[in-house]
Image 1 (tube, one colour):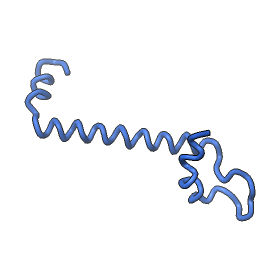
Image 2 (cartoon, helix red, strand yellow):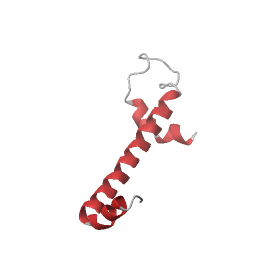
Image 3 (tube, rainbow, N blue to C red):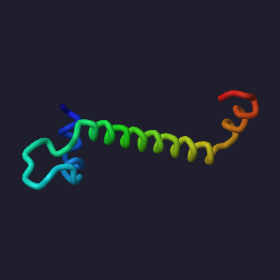
Length: 70
């Protein structure tokens, strides 16, 4: 699975197995948690860019808000 290889360095740092355990060190749900964490931060970056753009030129956003639409 591509996700497992991509996040292997993150999973290796987590204490989710006993020393000497040869099994996969992370439960399957951990991949979903890591992916959700990444999606959240991408969304926050997009919001930050939109917020910065609006702060730089607030006219169009303010006009759209006052006109009742985006």
